[in-house]
Image 1: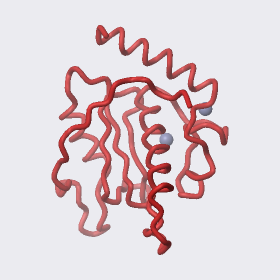
Image 2: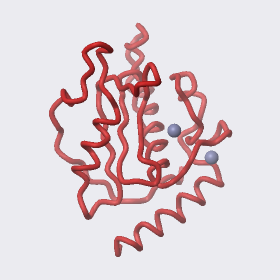
Image 3: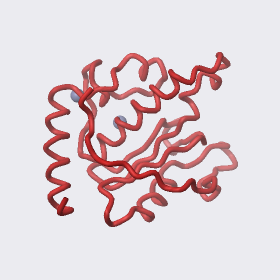
Image 4: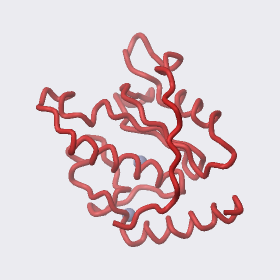
Length: 161
Ligand SMILES: [Zn+2]
Ligand SMILES: [Zn+2]
């Protein structure tokens, strides 16, 4: 696996994003959380990604696994619907971590300017069901990996790293 070679800093856990809760839908408005993450983005960080256990939505969709600023600073990913338990199945930690990893890579890809891919062997393939997440690999296709490497170099240069 090649993917992304940049140092990672884990930030302290935040309180539950009550400000984004929609009482009618009983879900959390992903764009509001994304805005919060953008505002807490450190100047020395290339990208900031939030991981939450709450279920996310945007108004036009029933749910989203995540949301990112295309070619921007931040992204958010939800693990809520990536757990087997959500579908009444037996918990599977390994599968959960694998799905979460793919979705984090996918949203990070968006923050580095990558758009969706038609290929099954590319993590940038759009997946709006867990079956779709399981079908694709955690890797970027050749094309997207090249694009990503180029973009990361460019961003690092801009940050003087
Ligand atoms: Zn996407
Ligand atoms: Zn691709």
